[in-house]
Image (cartoon, rainbow, N blue to C red; front, side):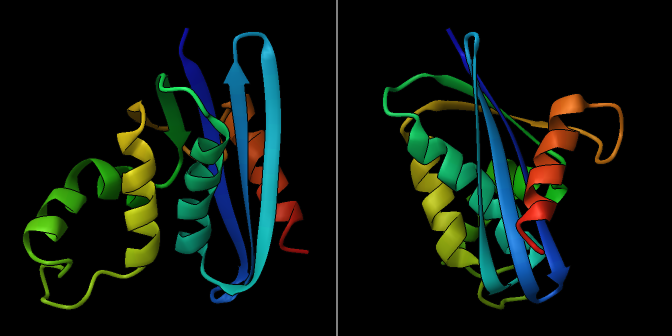
Length: 140
């Protein structure tokens, strides 16, 4: 059986107080997790959500992660390959931003078969909207 995870990050100010949230669907069970950081960015919170969710999954399994962040989805499925080849330098030859979190996310993904799906933010996706609500609550 595969697991589904919906993730989101939010920030009040950028940088500012940030929140992240993940909804983990494992069969009939649903687990909501969330957290916050005081001085962070929206992108860091978007990355933290799947990292924290994947930490909760102990056994190797197939996981589909739904994110409304193209930064996260494109970064982990496409850009990261070039970053690794270029010693973590971006196309503009600068050090990749949030490298610490990209390394954690990449490492977490190696432990499972992860499929990434992008969903439109603030649309009719009930679980994406719930993840957004939980993340925003942590920024207050």
